[in-house]
Length: 135
Image (cartoon, rainbow, N blue to C red; front, top):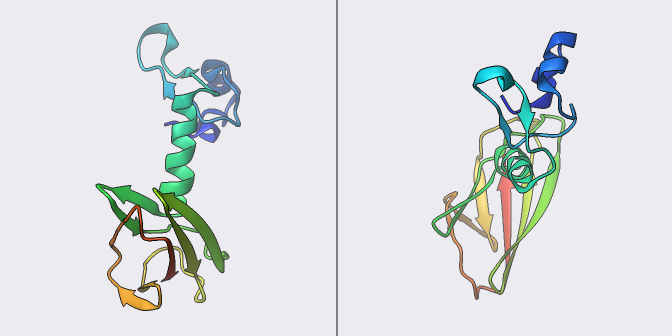
């Protein structure tokens, strides 16, 4: 619903949507004569959707209740990517490897050279931590 491209497939849809076709809106109106119109582009609500889409849903970096999980959903052509995540006084250097050209499916997670489950309890004073993920 918030993907701008879905509102630009026809001239009529563009006229109804009325906002920039290259910006994720914070919301889409759902009632009355404004139904289907995008709203609040270039605001904090809009930027939060970019964060969710890019960081959480594509790169797969998710933090819930102090636990870090990495569940990427990437183009199979991506061979690797890196993220530096700062938590308190700690820096988590995360490298995701995709040697077999997969889109999803974590097969191995290493924390500072030791294989672990894909749930990392974050520590504000852990210093520098190296995480390597294979999909």
